[in-house]
Length: 83
Image (cartoon, rainbow, N blue to C red):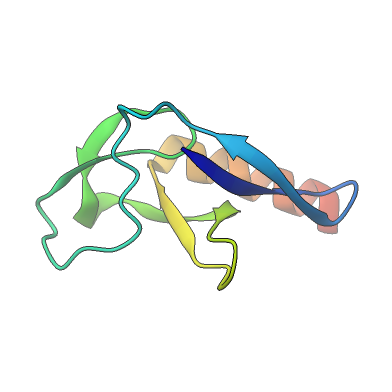
C-alpha cells in the first residue's frame, strides 16, 4: 500500500510504502479493532493509537494510527525540524 509521509527537509510528501498485510485503517468506530501502527507495523487496538504527525492521506492530510513509541519519535522529529 502506498501512503504519503511528510519530508521535513523538502516540506512536501514522499511516497511511503507499507506491507499489504498491515491493517493501516484510517478510521473505525470500533475502538477494539486490531490495527497496525503505520510506522512500525506493531498490532494494537485502534482506541489506544495516536494520530501520526507524518503519515497522512493524500487529499485530506488526515493522520494514520501509530503506537505511542512511534508517536514520541514523530514528535521528537517534529520539534527538531520545526524549532
